[in-house]
Amino acid sequence: MTPHPDGLYTARVNTIGNRARGLVRSSDGLLDVRLATPGTEQIGTNPEQLLAAGWSACFASSIAMAAQKRGLTLPVQPKVEAEVVLQLADDGHFLSVRLNVGLDGLDRRIAKVLVDEAHRICPFSKATLGNIDVAIRIT
Image 1 (cartoon, rainbow, N blue to C red):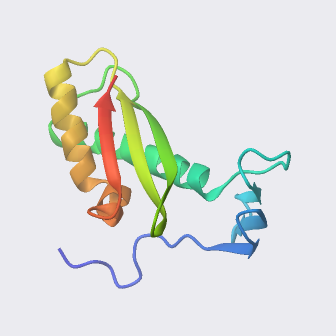
Image 2: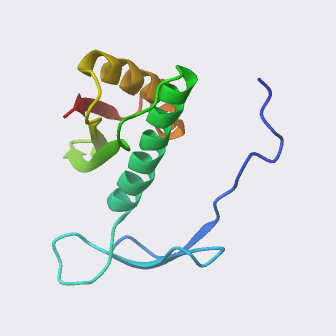
Protein backbone atom coordinates (compact mmCIF):
# COMPACT_ATOMS: atom_id res chain seq x y z
CA MET A 1 0.00 0.00 0.00
CA THR A 2 1.42 3.37 -1.00
CA PRO A 3 1.02 6.07 1.65
CA HIS A 4 -0.76 9.28 0.73
CA PRO A 5 1.95 11.91 0.00
CA ASP A 6 0.47 14.36 2.50
CA GLY A 7 -0.61 11.74 5.02
CA LEU A 8 -4.13 11.36 6.36
CA TYR A 9 -3.69 13.92 9.10
CA THR A 10 -0.86 16.04 10.46
CA ALA A 11 -0.84 17.11 14.11
CA ARG A 12 1.01 20.37 14.68
CA VAL A 13 2.02 21.25 18.22
CA ASN A 14 4.32 24.00 19.42
CA THR A 15 6.14 23.92 22.73
CA ILE A 16 7.60 26.98 24.38
CA GLY A 17 9.92 26.18 27.26
CA ASN A 18 10.60 22.62 28.35
CA ARG A 19 9.18 19.70 30.29
CA ALA A 20 9.78 21.46 33.61
CA ARG A 21 8.10 24.76 32.73
CA GLY A 22 6.59 24.82 29.32
CA LEU A 23 3.48 25.53 27.34
CA VAL A 24 2.15 23.20 24.66
CA ARG A 25 -0.43 24.32 22.16
CA SER A 26 -1.81 22.63 19.05
CA SER A 27 -2.24 24.62 15.85
CA ASP A 28 -6.04 24.37 16.17
CA GLY A 29 -5.96 25.48 19.83
CA LEU A 30 -7.78 22.37 21.09
CA LEU A 31 -4.72 21.22 23.02
CA ASP A 32 -3.45 23.96 25.30
CA VAL A 33 -1.59 22.72 28.37
CA ARG A 34 1.15 23.65 30.76
CA LEU A 35 4.06 21.34 31.40
CA ALA A 36 5.41 20.69 34.86
CA THR A 37 7.82 18.27 36.46
CA PRO A 38 6.00 15.39 38.19
CA GLY A 39 6.16 15.52 41.96
CA THR A 40 6.46 19.31 42.15
CA GLU A 41 3.84 21.80 43.23
CA GLN A 42 3.61 23.22 39.73
CA ILE A 43 0.35 22.69 37.87
CA GLY A 44 0.75 20.96 34.54
CA THR A 45 1.09 17.70 32.70
CA ASN A 46 4.24 16.06 31.34
CA PRO A 47 5.35 14.39 28.10
CA GLU A 48 4.84 10.92 29.55
CA GLN A 49 1.16 11.64 30.28
CA LEU A 50 0.70 13.05 26.79
CA LEU A 51 2.24 9.94 25.24
CA ALA A 52 0.10 7.69 27.46
CA ALA A 53 -3.06 9.56 26.39
CA GLY A 54 -2.26 9.30 22.70
CA TRP A 55 -1.15 5.69 22.80
CA SER A 56 -4.11 4.45 24.87
CA ALA A 57 -6.63 6.19 22.59
CA CYS A 58 -4.93 4.87 19.46
CA PHE A 59 -4.67 1.35 20.88
CA ALA A 60 -8.37 1.29 21.80
CA SER A 61 -9.22 2.35 18.24
CA SER A 62 -6.94 -0.39 16.90
CA ILE A 63 -8.77 -3.00 18.99
CA ALA A 64 -12.08 -1.82 17.53
CA MET A 65 -10.61 -1.98 14.01
CA ALA A 66 -9.32 -5.52 14.61
CA ALA A 67 -12.78 -6.59 15.83
CA GLN A 68 -14.51 -4.96 12.86
CA LYS A 69 -12.10 -6.65 10.46
CA ARG A 70 -13.20 -10.01 11.90
CA GLY A 71 -16.89 -9.12 11.84
CA LEU A 72 -17.06 -9.03 15.64
CA THR A 73 -19.16 -6.63 17.67
CA LEU A 74 -17.54 -5.68 20.95
CA PRO A 75 -19.96 -5.95 23.90
CA VAL A 76 -18.49 -2.77 25.44
CA GLN A 77 -15.94 -0.14 24.45
CA PRO A 78 -12.33 -1.21 25.03
CA LYS A 79 -10.62 0.29 28.07
CA VAL A 80 -6.91 0.92 27.78
CA GLU A 81 -4.79 2.21 30.63
CA ALA A 82 -1.36 3.20 29.38
CA GLU A 83 1.46 3.54 31.87
CA VAL A 84 4.47 5.32 30.40
CA VAL A 85 7.38 4.92 32.78
CA LEU A 86 10.34 7.28 32.67
CA GLN A 87 13.40 5.22 33.55
CA LEU A 88 17.01 6.12 34.26
CA ALA A 89 20.02 3.95 33.42
CA ASP A 90 23.76 4.60 33.31
CA ASP A 91 23.48 5.86 29.73
CA GLY A 92 20.52 8.19 30.40
CA HIS A 93 16.75 8.28 30.42
CA PHE A 94 14.49 5.89 28.54
CA LEU A 95 10.85 4.86 28.50
CA SER A 96 8.95 1.65 29.10
CA VAL A 97 5.23 1.12 28.67
CA ARG A 98 2.53 -1.05 30.18
CA LEU A 99 -0.81 -1.30 28.40
CA ASN A 100 -3.59 -2.69 30.60
CA VAL A 101 -6.52 -3.61 28.37
CA GLY A 102 -10.07 -4.26 29.51
CA LEU A 103 -12.42 -6.03 27.12
CA ASP A 104 -15.32 -6.85 29.42
CA GLY A 105 -17.77 -9.46 28.21
CA LEU A 106 -15.40 -10.91 25.63
CA ASP A 107 -13.94 -14.42 25.71
CA ARG A 108 -10.32 -14.17 26.86
CA ARG A 109 -8.96 -16.04 23.81
CA ILE A 110 -10.75 -13.68 21.44
CA ALA A 111 -9.59 -10.71 23.50
CA LYS A 112 -5.97 -11.90 23.15
CA VAL A 113 -6.30 -12.23 19.37
CA LEU A 114 -7.73 -8.70 19.12
CA VAL A 115 -5.09 -7.22 21.43
CA ASP A 116 -2.25 -8.91 19.53
CA GLU A 117 -3.66 -7.61 16.23
CA ALA A 118 -4.12 -4.13 17.71
CA HIS A 119 -0.46 -4.10 18.75
CA ARG A 120 0.51 -4.96 15.16
CA ILE A 121 -1.64 -2.24 13.57
CA CYS A 122 -1.55 0.59 16.15
CA PRO A 123 0.61 3.44 14.78
CA PHE A 124 2.03 4.16 18.25
CA SER A 125 3.01 0.50 18.69
CA LYS A 126 4.59 0.47 15.23
CA ALA A 127 6.47 3.72 15.85
CA THR A 128 8.06 2.40 19.03
CA LEU A 129 8.66 -1.22 17.96
CA GLY A 130 12.10 -2.31 19.14
CA ASN A 131 12.72 1.03 20.90
CA ILE A 132 10.52 0.74 23.98
CA ASP A 133 9.81 -2.27 26.17
CA VAL A 134 6.03 -2.80 26.03
CA ALA A 135 4.12 -5.12 28.32
CA ILE A 136 0.47 -5.76 27.48
CA ARG A 137 -1.92 -7.25 30.01
CA ILE A 138 -5.57 -8.13 29.48
CA THR A 139 -7.41 -7.31 32.70
